[in-house]
Length: 173
Image (tube, rainbow, N blue to C red; front, side):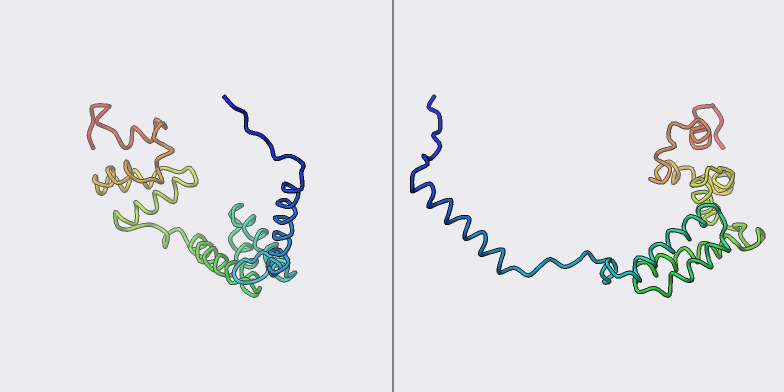
């Protein structure tokens, strides 16, 4: 098997290298400088966007601590910033915070679909009772929960499998 030979250091190899280098440099000179990164159509180097992002992060920390009233106040400040994307996200979290601040009587789901949606939300925070109620009210919700991607990571949890696969225990509800 023959080995591939590298071009010798002769003038033809140097001419090719010099030609390709100069053409690369020519191309780079003709290009405009890259734009700074953008988020929501506003340059991220803008100190106002940086301040808005900091407010948003602080508000989310309060939101995750379930301090919804304070989180809402901070999220409303985010709405005043220049980034449309951050404002849209803040608006969404404000709606959720308002919903969670409502009295418990207003939050109680009435229909099987509301129970199912509430069950998904409660499952996200580790609470299971609404999914059980949704299945009790409408047994076909069991099938939906079995096939819902939101529940995929719980397939190995015994509480979840007892709820969704009662036929394995010999009882069908």
